[in-house]
Image 1 (cartoon, rainbow, N blue to C red):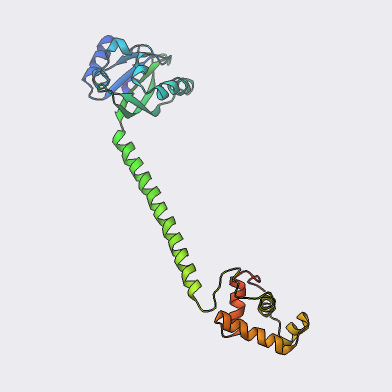
Image 2 (cartoon, one colour):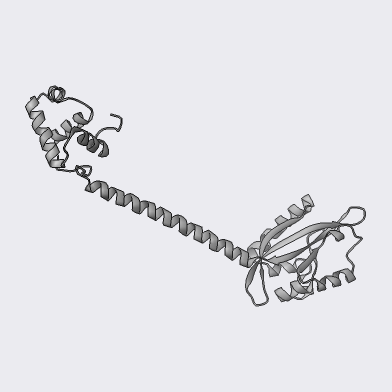
Length: 237
């Protein structure tokens, strides 16, 4: 299309020559009104040239894309830059296909804008391939998310089966045992716990033994880990 950058005007013979081009070629005036579509364009859309002139070619576009076309072209007119945009065109069989519509301005010898010339390329297969890839990625992310959740659930189950594990709110512990477990996890010695709770050392030792038996834990470190895991004390306590 570069050899059309500076011409006095596209003559009827020039426009007719575009019918030999296998691509879907279009020509618009400086106001973006259709001046010509070649035979390839007409063959794909099933429309006669007379139907396409002016704004007639917009009837081949999907309504949503046709509504957006004026704003997009006005931007091209304002910047006088080449442009490409995706739009849906209805084929003669009534089905819509995705096309990449590319155009560029062309001028006369004095540099005045004569209009735009461009072509349409069917990109439906690429669009479908990208959509399939997007769906595959979404499915992959979903699988990973589900896998992570499954692993997390399995880990929770395994932790539940560990000796000494109990759920929050496990009613196996009495309020007094919870108090003692809390103080053990905070690092208090047996005598200090007794002073805190105003009970004897023997009572504290008895409760601690019951805790270990009830939770199937065999040392103070295990009791501390249980308390932290169940939110009874912060990890850095």
